[in-house]
Image 1 (cartoon, chains in turn purple, yellow):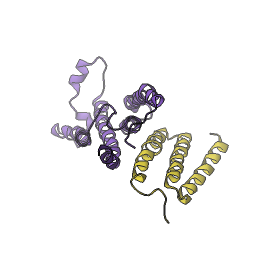
Image 2 (cartoon, rainbow over the protein chains, first blue to last red):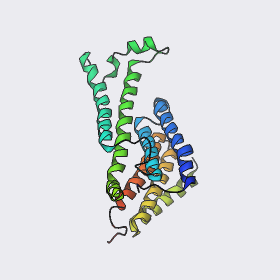
Image 3 (spheres, rainbow over the protein chains, first blue to last red):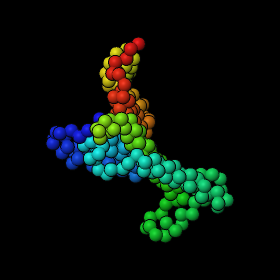
Image 4 (cartoon, each protein chain N blue to C red):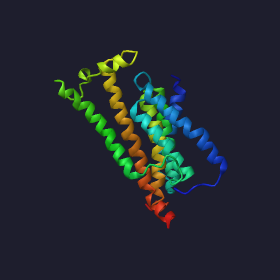
Length: 155
Length: 81
């Protein structure tokens, strides 16, 4: 499952049409998750499926960007850390765990033109953490399942 | 919505689930399982749970199939029971 296929049509369709479209659709699902169906979890699964598609057709060693499984685990922990920080920071301002209303987000409203409530900002931060964690865990699962094939291929 | 469509989808759902349980070839069972996920996603979208349908379509019909193919490639393809 990790070797590179030889069909140039497959390469062209996957690299030019499918992977960019899937990543763009994942970004749309992620950004519009508050208003329409979607969110961090679904967007992470969709973007991870684009990476898995690239690894299936182009080969794990040739698919770009080459993220090693070791760094993907760190990335997943980083996503969980974002979630935990978004929960812990309100506790320093005298609120409960994961109480987004007391997140210090006034400085962001001064920089940006539009106004967002602290609750919306907190939800967005949590979605970013969920997105990173789900994406990297799913790609890690694929890499670990096909690890044996890569070992045979390298020999 | 259209109740005939819903009934047809339900019948297909049960049929595909029985196929996934009964077939010997594990890759064929996996294809039936993916079809099950897709029909379930369509049913959830009809019933108005679009968020759950999106999750089911992306995870159940997308990633799970690839991961289970990777799992099958590590062992024998035919089930023995």
